[in-house]
Length: 471
Ligand code: SAM
Ligand code: SF4
Image 1 (cartoon, rainbow, N blue to C red):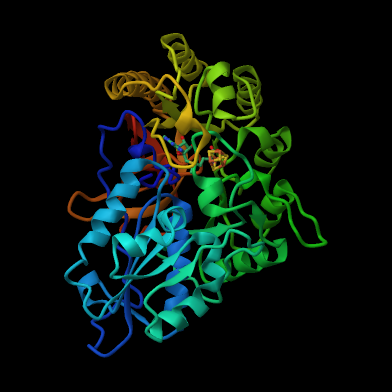
Image 2: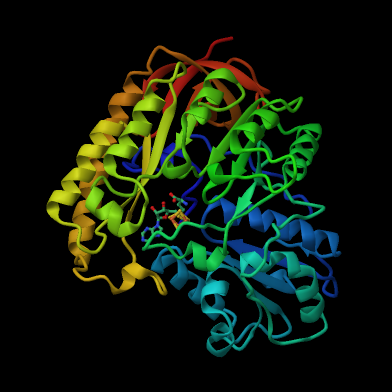
């Protein structure tokens, strides 16, 4: 899924309006023209923010082992693909990339990490004998050993066990985003949604010790990060495995208390584990961002049951009503799947009416993609591809109208923006509000990157806002 968890409103349903400001390029820390005999690496990442952050950790591990990062795969002695298999297209893309090395891999180590590695396992060696490392994310704790083997010339090295109760922690994590630092607090998933590969590719749920999470947050704050985003497939199912026994809300509050931390975000929340305590914490603690990503998947209780989502439409809408009743206006985004097997026109209409009732600020919408080893694969009444496309387009159109109306209502209001982008030619700055809206703006000042400024909204599109820095 392409960055499905960066709740980047410009990428959400109804896309059309483009962000005018690109994020400031990050200096390529550690990237060099490595000498021919040096150990060097290149990693391409597919999928969600969890994958992006796993890559940052793998990069840290490689840099600590003396590898140098290089800018192209051709320059690298080690080429890794950190993969996603959530939908078929994402998995196909990975095989096409690996295929590129069929005749060119000579002397290079090519490795496949992540969900496709876990899903396809040793079959990858049969399909692509030039690949020598296959490692699923649950086995990243073993990567140093696996790299020892690969470096020793072993041609078929695997890390595919899901029977691991540790989380992946490294001494050094390379940070590819200089304004927002990610911390994984929970890995894997114990739910069993009938369409989803994640429990099989990322393994069972494992929470990280709260002291380790808080140490990382303090180190990040000390090194200048002011915004932290907590990650997990079901981030709000967090349960501290240490004797301290912190729950998710306790952890949120503790991170918000770390000196230097100004914003705390978290994604993705599962509706089943979402409760009033999270809303109360957002109401009480200004550092907790006023944005919740709460994927619903379908508006039809019948389809939710077939999806094994563990809640009904009405139960979900009760949670939305509680969020809307908060003292701080909280922005709300969601994921939706159309064309699940057996989804009738009535079920689809339920999804559209749920959009209207929820008034989301953004939706990631997907056509159902049948995945290997999932219960939905053998369900009857597959929806034809053209019908899935029709429903997706209708959903996106509805949601776009909602976003236009919601963003229009913000004209005239002022928001604090964490500035993370600049277009010097157009003299436009850009950044995120606490509620994660993209707000581009003009300013008389010329050194704003990384700062927090107050911006008054003067124009609105479906996917971003435009305004003026109120100096
Ligand atoms: N754990 C999160 C939750 O429960 O909402 C979602 C994580 S999942 C990795 C990301 C999103 O991909 C899901 O919310 C769902 O909308 C979408 N997705 C997962 N499997 C899919 C499939 N087989 N076809 C289409 N979309 C899928
Ligand atoms: Fe997949 Fe469901 Fe787990 Fe989310 S909660 S990762 S959709 S199985």
